[in-house]
Structures are given as C-alpha cells and as structure tokens.
Image (cartoon, rainbow, N blue to C red):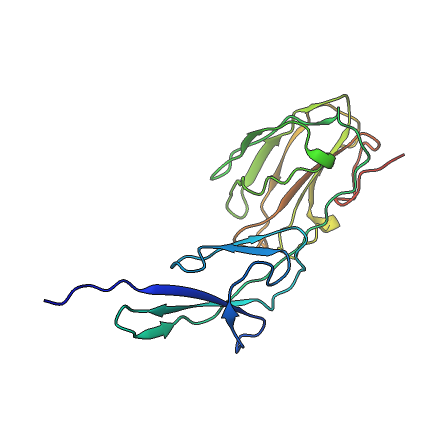
Length: 212
C-alpha cells in the first residue's frame, strides 16, 4: 500500500517579479510582519509606518513528502498609506458611534475616545452597489462640532476634495446624512474617513483638525 504524504510550504518575498526571492522574514520590508509563512495561507500585517509602494511580490514553494517541488506564480502586494490627521488634544469631544443603514451590508459601531484623537476601524465595513445610497449617523459627545465624511472612490490613498461626500455647514451634535456610490467608483475595498472638528463648522481637510 502507498500512504499519503504531507506537503510542506514556504512563502518567499522579492522586490521584483523575477526575484531574487528569499524566505519571508519580519521587517522585510520594514513595517511588515508575517504569520503562517510555512503554511498554505500567508498572513501579512502592515503597520502604518510601512512605506507606500507596489514592488512587493510573493510566491509559495510546495514540496511533497516524496521530494517533488512546485511553486506558485508571483502575487503582487501594493501598500497604500493614508494620512493620519494631526489633532489638538481634546479628550472630551469624540464620536460615540458610527452607524450605516441601507447598504448591502452595514456598520453598527460604538466607540470611546481614541488615543491621540485618531481611531483606525478598518476592521469594520459597509458595502453598497454603484448608484445606490448609504445612510449614516454619527453620534458625538463633548458639544457641537463640524463633521465631514470622505470616501476614496478611486482607491489612490488620497481623500480628494471631490471625494468629500458629506459635510456640515453649521456646528451640530450627532449629524446624520447620506451619500450615493458613484458609477465611477472602483469595486473592492475602499477607505472611508469620518472627521469631527470643534474649531470649524465645515471641515475641509481630511488630514488636519483646525487648532484655531
């Protein structure tokens, strides 16, 4: 009788599609860590400090128990860096929740003050079809503030002025609103930013909270 053999896996990384490739190691490239590098599913964790770029290629080498080896075609990883808003210290004014309705899937999230005034909630997502509407609510605490929402429809890691989908024009508490997904929006994972600013009623800079 012939028994089944268990294959082994080794993921490798290179900065060019043609190599040279080396086994994945943490901090190669800087700001990137890996888990499961010797399984059939590599997990890649990218820190905010990782440099933006697309010269990142991965492949897996599979070796059978009988010594036969094959490898996958390279897969490309693009790292995009979004700006982190600079925020004056105000630990009493913040969003207490962000909720959406009307989407194919929706967000229902409660939160407290985030360290430094910036919270990363990219583990949460809502989805909607092109041409359809998403409704949202932004409960706040700490008094009145201006609120704005951006969606990076073209996925270029920049929140353009044309991608501001909502903004208050007067100081308010817990504003609500809606926006439609444009026909030109790229499919796939798309970043959204919600910002409140107690120094301006009409926030226009997704990377800055006014200090005066």
